[in-house]
Image (cartoon, rainbow, N blue to C red):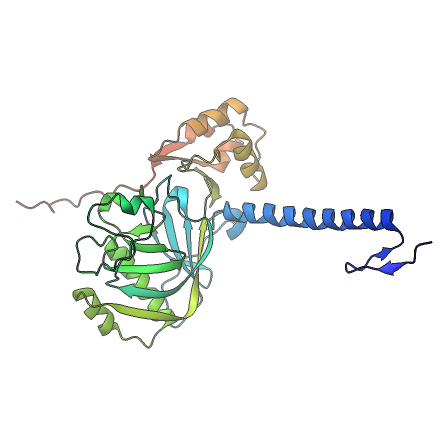
Length: 325
């Protein structure tokens, strides 16, 4: 005869067979919970911060306020768009470059705890570093050294991931780095100065201006970390428009089933959208372009007729008369 006992999971154990059954059931419950958590995480990292499902259909903009420390930075990799938010409102968006396919940027939440002007570069012990002539893993390469690729400023995100200065303008909108985000210097300065003004107002602006003019390092610790939310969403309904971005890391995101689900889950009637039209919409996207269409056109069965293929990165028109003579 077996005595009843209470095991560590809180279940009554009556005999060996029953105990095994209880343990299996408990483990299955834990496994299901884990799978659900993983599914939720996977869904989160593929949901653009600009999606109508997140914003309710409207993104409210606001002027930056140095007295409001509630900041967040987001980046949707396929759109190459990094955004600074304050109190849940969009302050400013910037276009960036990101990691190569072989060295993709981390997808998920990171934190910025400091900002460094004129940073040194310590090459990691990676194969790609060993392929660079005149550079050794672990050496300290100062800001004044032409071998330093970080430029005038870096924002560490942990685990060697960084936001730093782009090497050239064409870095923007391209896969160019070994896992880092690259920004044009003027944009990077603007982002960094806004973060410092809100998260460490004791740092005087003249110290930052001096760092920008010199090669002397300036490290500014943030009073509270700034969340940097990096996601990978190629199919976004934003402000009533569907945006289809290129699947830059070839993760099989631009599938007809996923596009249909994105539309349906965003409240778009797809009864007039057939499979052939969905495939044609997806095929219009290239590495440098996006497909944009009003959801009303989709509901009216005019997605292909009304949709537009637009540059992924807006083309800045030259100002008339600005050419040097």
